[in-house]
Length: 311
Ligand code: BDR
Ligand code: CA
Image 1: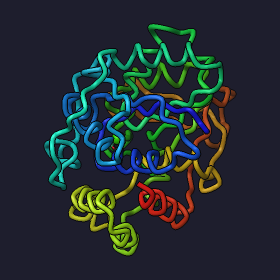
Image 2 (image 1 turned 60 degrees about the vertical axis):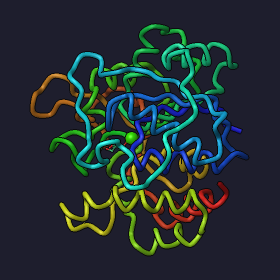
Image 3 (image 1 turned 180 degrees about the vertical axis):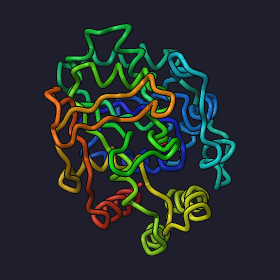
Image 4 (image 1 turned 135 degrees about the horizontal axis):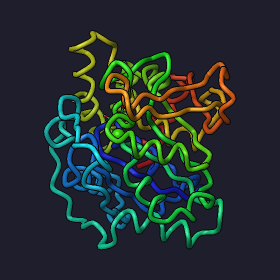
């Protein structure tokens, strides 16, 4: 079983990722879940995270609250995609679970120091603020991380918040720069991959057919989430970004990519938050990431459906 910490800013696609993780207890041990400001402010992402834990039947899960805002930029949010609460689309009770007293940054540091070196995987589904703060406060944890699997960035697909940048990296590029420079083995799920995972009708119908409460709520969330892309681009559903991170832990063979160097632009006004991917190895910069570009979309949706069915 892989020990993981999930750092997240739910978000309907974050919720789908959490459901995939909670539905896979044979492979995954969730040590803790950390909330970060991202799609919506922290008060909402923390609340949403606890709503998802309860929906998945895990009120005992440990939820920690982290950074209120990016390292040194004003907060940018994405209510235009995720709704006012960040998790619009389904009627659910307010959570009864409370967040832990300890903050997310100290939880991440303590856990990495306590667990044997090279056994904890960090999974990030939002801006990298919490991870960067932990690395800055405790640089000794970097070599202890087994792997950091993130949703973020883009290469030939371009950006989804500016022409150059993907949302999670754009929101806190300075944090991303710290994480990309930390020497931790990175696996990146960029827009190039997630835009291949549209919530097409036939796929969502299979989730609906599970007939369980969590499945039904997920379908309602996805219906809200996908309307942005359908209305704006006429696409065949919304791109299911964040579950790719968990799917990689369960079935890495669904994805393919390349080891290469990826740097983060933090200065240029026009391209800030861009992931500069040396796909063709035109520099002598050392590879620091496995950058994914393709996915077996049917295999991915099969996995997601099967695991949501186990909740
Ligand atoms: C990322 O941004 C958020 O809106 C999604 O939850 C995902 O993590 C996609 O760019
Ligand atoms: Ca997210």
